[in-house]
Length: 619
Figure (cartoon, rainbow, N blue to C red):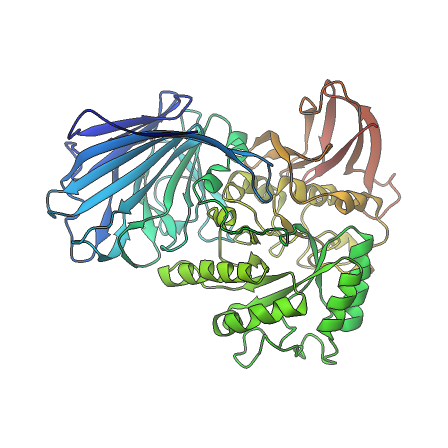
């Protein structure tokens, strides 16, 4: 349902208000205030302040006073309430319901220059973007800075991360320098939770956030933007909720702020589970294909080294030429490996470093399609600037032309582009198992990084000190690791990242990963607190998978099964950390019980522990 715009009766209002469909989110935009020279806005949720009198400003080269003395010359409103079906996702249906306000503005300092702010109020929060309409007097321009302010209540604390793969720190909005990543999740003193993010970043420069003054955040761009009118910036998103789990439950707001899929044919886009091939040899590849087929995996992945050293300019990504430091025999027959994998219904993914991507993209895409490759993992791509942001998203579009899925590593975080080009399956931009973080970090991630969208965490399982490994080892229990791919969403899930088939000794709990899907029909975030614990339940068909993790502390929880179909019985296959009484080297205890929607399952979690459950309906 889309209702046409309704023009306000007031000709030149000094302010305009917008409310969410449920009336809880209320924002006011004003062009005339006593202490600000320009456009400002305020935001409340259920009557509680979130943002107060914060400035909105774009700075354009050669027009230093463009956004000073702005006047609202007209306003338009509309309502939308639609439901769309994603190619894949955490839900099989996504509702897009909002009230919209468009402010038509004119700068009294720059005559004949017009400007717009488009605002959408969702039940989940507020989003707005700047627009420069097409106009003869304003065809080419350079944005040299954006100063969007977020003025928060005194006492607000933020989960900051200096870069995309950094640890998170909870700190007050005072006395820190530099910038922090988005989404930036906030704990307000009035018992609200908020998160500031970015949606639809495609042909702009990345936004980060800096502390401008105590309790006042401001957007910082990674360089200038040269564009032509008409033009719109990415959306600035402020999610608000009374509980932190609601932020994760409703993170589809980022997808809703992106255009629908541009791909008519998506049958070739196939989510699944991936394992890395480490020997870069034909024999090793075939052995891994056999393991993947036995363990319910869908893809094998050849990482750095298959076409030479990834950082050497001479390395040619159109030819197989194994880096001698990885395999001095150079005995990888990639075509034979792909043929064998196909015979076992296993796909093949290839890694390509940014050096080769930038030089050879147009050559490798048709070539890889002819080889039968299913997708590419981009490595160490440039991010942030207008140039490289545009290049990267254009590269994803080109991959779609050749039916190639994409996983972007390293310093890239999603802003919802996967809705428009769903061949962008996942991305890194996270401190995952490559850095071996602790369990507390893992319980922060669902409420911060995962609000933006899928992440490739690169899950490990056997890299443990008790198995003889030293130094870089897992700091979490086996069932913590087992539950993570349910708690964390990624349509392509890389499993066993630092593991090899030889480490597998028939551990019975890994049947959970064998049957586990990577995309879902329904998701319920059941309980959780930032940095403490979380339980997520996900349904595919009529089966449910439930993952629970705790931080570095032990705790006991109850999982209510009210999400199950009423009147139906289910077999619960439960995996939890046991002790020496369990005679396997991982000491994972597996039990089954009959349950229904009226039951609870007790969860006793060891420090850094977890629990994984599969719920299968009784036929």
